[in-house]
Length: 267
Image 1 (cartoon, helix red, strand yellow):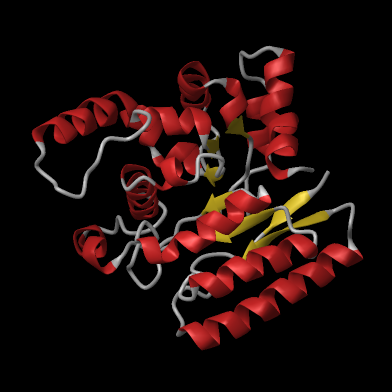
Image 2 (tube, rainbow, N blue to C red):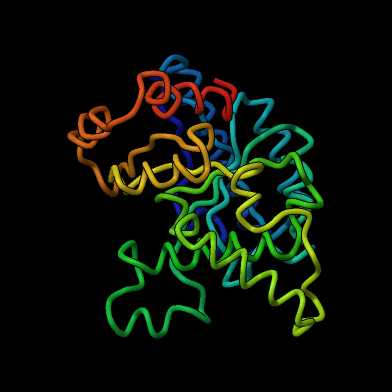
């Protein structure tokens, strides 16, 4: 059994660009050394410093040379989301190299955190998912996946609730396009839910809950779903047995626990 290891949130996203790149190199070098010591145990994800998108694109290439299988994007960059086109060299590099990006939560951005913090909802209980779901929606509606149609993005925690909003997201996004209310919103090649079926993979880190898994299976297809545990933040080994007992065919269960991850991450 192998473990995908990554620099946890917020990574180096909160530092000035020069400092962030130096710390990122150090983190990637240390991770590469750990993977070399335990090649049958550890698999790495490349950390980046999105403050410098061109540098990050080159670090993604270096990460591939180090044997890493994905890129970790730890949410917003000092409250700025990466749908801004200045960040798109990151997505261009990931698509060109066939390297999936894992969009990982961090604390909500400055514009979101106030009302959440007032009621203790800013962390994993709600705020992380709100911020990450917003980030992913911004990437979709600004056309990142139309510009980079082979880009693969992985999102955790049951898709940060977005699969359960799919009907309304598709309907209201189409209505917004027809209304012409926002000049920057342009028609997309697919409905919002279509990108979950083409570009996006959902893990169930922290959401070891059969009803949610079965819903996503029925709407997205088993090939878009992957098992994950939210270690070290939510560590309950009994989750594995609970999910292994799901009402699901042996073939689908193997895809969920094993072969989908092998395909996505090239394991």
